[in-house]
Image (tube, rainbow, N blue to C red; front, side, top):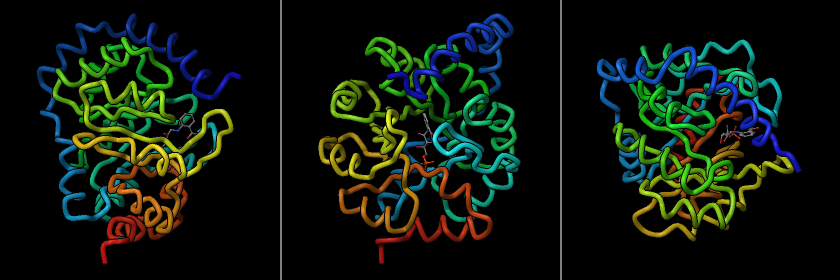
Length: 267
Ligand SMILES: O=C(O)c1ccccc1NCC(=O)[C@H](O)[C@H](O)COP(=O)(O)O
């Protein structure tokens, strides 16, 4: 069965080949020399979690394969500022165009006005994209175990760590988790979205969370749609959450919801 992720990777291969022709790696490497130092992404999450609050990675996401249009005309800078005012620990910015309506322009625009550490959320298949992410000021990149061999995941992770970035290793099941735990990044994402059925189920985090050993940290991703979801996942020990759709859909009160999500369970 072909999943949305398979379809994305299919066009990513062509996209990256075109990018490499249009903007050779050497150009990006030159830009690295003037890039600001990475802001500690994992560290920012740890600081919030150490207070027993919920460390939120709030996502900028205009549309998605599962939801279709979420907020197509979104002003990403204004929304990122609302996230910051609400007390988000970090931001995640989807830069994939065809499936998520994002871009590196969005990323850059947010980077220039918001001081929170930022995850460049895209579908990494080539170290070129990791260098590109750093050249655009990313503090963290996503490595999705479901679409990579062990060797690819190791190469992408190694490149990002060498450039001083953090790496969020994304898993959906026990097999991907086992592979991710061998890599030298502590941030282990458990994605509650089943890419075959395109539904989210928080029991994925409840099942995989307890398998994450000391020294590694769980980030619960997808389907965290309410205060109740956070309260439920806190029971598994989760203190770090990646949240997109439910925050993007808010017509008003986005910053206030971020604040409530940050502190729920602590009182
Ligand atoms: O969101 C999708 O439909 C999707 C489809 C295929 C690959 C990845 C996809 N989402 C990326 C994400 O991981 C989420 O944007 C992120 O975890 C936030 O999820 P949510 O809070 O449910 O928007």
